[in-house]
Image (cartoon, rainbow, N blue to C red):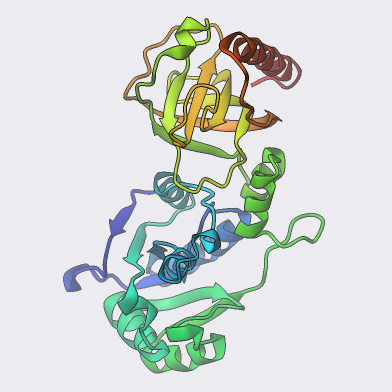
Length: 321
């Protein structure tokens, strides 16, 4: 159930502070665990006449502290970019997202101020759902027991949700999705997400090298710190017609022809000559074929690209679109 989403980069103005049912988190990927939480938020909102709302942060708190401590390697890879995250939240029934800036003031806010000022006053929270291990406030001093105590004083009804598990009893989490993507296991990632893993972006101009190799591609910039493993994938593209289109794509830095380190998703669609520049396209990664390689010359690269395309065609012959 997709809704029209209202996005706030800071606390809403007083006249826009609708009483809400809220959940808090980064919601990277909006996986099946997140979806279970969102379903409860939406159900409570409908029952109590509240606005279903999400509070999330940019940058990710772990990214903020990684940069603060000059430890960039501790910054978590991103499963989805902001556009895909917001789309998934809207598709799940959320009506409002508060995208709060995580900065020094937020990091140093006391647990008491976070509940009484931010949640109760600034966001007008009446019903709140968090995970059982939720921590908040300066140095993560607040826990669920303190949240219930402070929330009760402010008229916030506090609920918790146990971990959501898959059919094998494994916890569904953003960390599990990142691990699957890092391994190139997009099938497992899709199972955890409840939908095929993909990325959305506008098609940009490239160097047109693919045309000279008889494999024209459409290029998209990829979210920084993309969690997906670099390499060659079987893909399908949405947004260029009524039906999805089959293809093969390269995700990575193009080591044979580039040296600037910029990550791109280059998608070759089969048997099509279409002008996609500027269009908003979603590309779903269906199967990882191989890792990215640096080839000694263009003929070797070309042979590998055509072999990849044949493998992708075989995939669709077996599985369909």
